[in-house]
Image 1 (cartoon, rainbow, N blue to C red):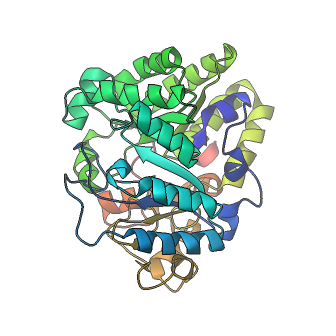
Image 2: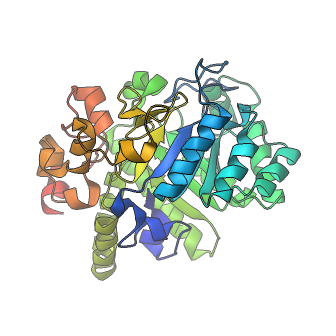
Image 3: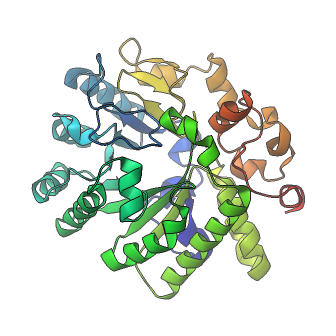
Length: 385
């Protein structure tokens, strides 16, 4: 994640102790763990990385098996446990497991489409002790509902956000950028301010699940640069007007370098500080500071690597799987900078980006060490900065 308000304006964010602090948990391979708790979902989003379905998959982890996994993660020292899906609210044991995880000392987070968060559900989220709820909204009303393939989804999601805010639940908005919706971003910023949403993450498209078919629907490099300029401009404007809103971008570490280069033109001293923070963060953390356990218990480098498993938590503890670097991919991801090819191999900012997303390189080139096709920096920028 690139914290725009933190890096551009010096406003501290909620997870900067993990993101920009030396000696953070990621440095000891204690990852944030994303659990796709079920494949079942009430929507059918065209970019869904898990290719969610109306029904749960056979063989999903049971409540008892999930508790066993949580015991291990707590002992292992995982800093955050994120309940994702599908739609996590379609698991009957969500609150039971959330309460159990919190009791074990894990910080718990939910990633949801928000359409099922009634006033009563928001109260349950608060009382269970979930520390944050990230709610996906992928456009203004017409675009979002088309994206979700459900009329009225936008209104339900917005109501879910409002119910969280009303009941004291820390909530944020999640927006996945693509050709279908990037022109709505200015309106999304207006919505953020009008609704008083305290945190928004703009995600770049990753070519996985149903999103694999959307390679052609990703932004061009020129569109990506224009979009980042808009996000950076609005982030600076929000801070200048003392609005209490945190803006981040996710899944493209070129954003951090682009932000640094922009700042370098205006304030070289501040830019140098930002570059140091980016180097402390180290860029992409797939297989290092981020991990995924899918609904069947398979362990992946992140939630987009579903086609490659390091092992299954039913057969072996997560902690043992995660620390076993005999797996060629896991070892490569943790020592990937010398393996990078093409544009990523030439880039002077490898220590601050770490080659971005290897799964995108694989999707486009069939080679996980090739350049990330979503990097929009120019040759001049990556060589000379």
